[in-house]
Amino acid sequence: MLNIEIQCGSIVLVVLVMYLSFREKRINLLSRRLFFYTLISTLISLIADIFSIFCIVYAENLPAFLTIAACKFYLLTLITEGYFGLLYAGTDFFEGSAFLKFRNIFGAILGIGCILIIVLPLGYYFDDKCVYSYGEAAYATYLIVAVFLISTFITGVILGKKTNPIRRRAILLWMLFWIIAATIQISNPEYLLGGFASALGMILLYAELENPKEGMDRVTGLYSTNTLRELMEDYFERGKSFAGMNIVINIPNKEVTTERSVLIAMSKYLRVFKKAYLFRNVGQELVMIFNSAAEMYAAYDRIRYDMEDNKIFGDMENNMKPVLKFYLMPSSNVAQSSDDVLLFHSYFAEDLTDKDCVVVDASAVTRISDFRRVKAVIAEALSKNRLEVFYQPIYSTEEKKFVSAEALARIRDEEEKIVMPGIFIPVAEETGMIVQVGEEVFRQVCRFIREYDIRKLGLEYIEINLSVAQCEKEKLAEEYMEIINEYGVDPSMINLEITETGSISAKSTLMRNMDRLRNEGVSFSLDDFGTGRSNLDYFVNMPVDIIKFDREFTSSYFKNGKARQVMASVIQMIKNMGLKIVTEGIETKEQLDDMALLGVDYIQGFYFSKPLPQGEFLEYIRKNL
Ligand code: C2E
Ligand code: MG
Ligand code: MG
Image: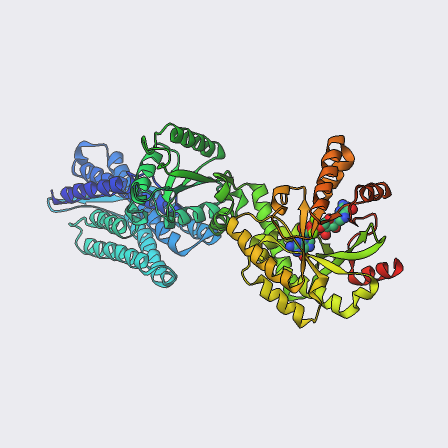
């Protein structure tokens, strides 16, 4: 019997498509789920079709209600298939609540259709040429299926302009199959082509849209970055939270081990984690998405353990072995979108240079948002002249008067509140904005020296902080001399405070800059002495004139006996080298007297004054002349 043969062939096709689509761990996207439901309902419908044909053919030997039930069941599967097909097409065109509305409207139509099929009468007919059912229940089915088909078609035509043309074309072609098959079948009931048309349609959709290989990376066989994005977007839209791990693979020796072989080895190994979705990210990075933080941490521990155990890349020599670094995001709740997640990636890239694992949790994200906020405050301060310089007086124990001051940057925010350098200097340093900040401070100080002729007030020079990034600038000396000349300031009124720089190349640039500026008369101080940032062995060969003791260092002197001895001998040594000393952070009379006794030349601290805005500072100095 021709009909059964076609139906059986169709079943084979649908099963094949199911196998091809779902042998890989399936990405849990809405569209993938609906594709799956459409496939399943197509399959059930084909089986129900065959079963109902048998029932009709052998109706004489069967109870009447069974044949009718089998026929009605077939009709029910038919409209269900149409419904899922429509929803599947709809995922492309509707999002979020619009999709829910779309689903509800057609869900209601499906419900009505089911009731009609169940309650309305149905008859069946067969002769040696054809088998079919008829009656109100059958007509209701045709009507509902027609509604679904036409709606899918209209959705594709009208709304499809918004979506990608390949998807649109595939869905329209699929509908065309159906409509042609339905037309043939209605005019020639002996050809039962509906089932065959839907099987062909599924193959078409599979090939064009749902072939999982489409969203896969060729090298590793894992899902691609695009699929990762799609999955994350789907999760965020549905409010489903997840955990993510991004593995960065660094290869120490690219001649011995190729990137490709390492990626393949790693991705093969990762397949043991059955609960995770695996993706190839850009470059040498692989991503794992988990349902929970616990699953992610378990995998993380296991990977580190297996790495130690040489289970991933085999017995490579240690210096050839790829190095793994990790971003861990225990909960996606810290992000609002897949864009956010990708942003984290770039934000924390820096942290991974000296660590092998960065945890992107709520506190890390707060850090980012604080960082962004402060960055915006700095940018605004620079463009709207909200950067201000405060001055803290420096007292000479020998001359018993104020001889200089340190210039300290402040930002006045929108609400006139002062933002302290402890907040914005680190951000300015990290973003490189420090160069502009430093230059602006320098200009303001030059203008100040020029405008108020501060020598008359007994001030011999102003100390200005230089950050490491500035010292490493090749042209720093030229640029600063240009500003000094622009304002007509005597270079000997400028003292630049430096701290220890990290690398040797940076140090040689700094030395060149210092030499040039010193030749013009600028002097230098070594700031933050006694902290990690500046130490004994560093200043020995640095051409500085003044050593500034950090507040921490000074206060340790007042706290314990050993530190007193160290301090006393350090002071002696520095003085023997012909350098001057400033102690910072002097807050009481006793501290002042103690330091003077030890032979410290200059005192800076709250005992005299906090850093003051320019006007108040001038007033203070005038009062204490
Ligand atoms: P610093 O250069 O070591 O400056 C001394 C800091 O100690 C100042 O903090 C000052 O207010 C504080 N200080 C002075 N005496 C006392 C005291 O008796 N008690 C206490 N508790 N603190 C005292 P400030 O102004 O908050 O500046 C902090 C740091 O920010 C500076 O440390 C400096 O490293 C940096 N900074 C400030 N302005 C600039 C700038 O224009 N450029 C650069 N690159 N860094 C700057
Ligand atoms: Mg300083
Ligand atoms: Mg200091």
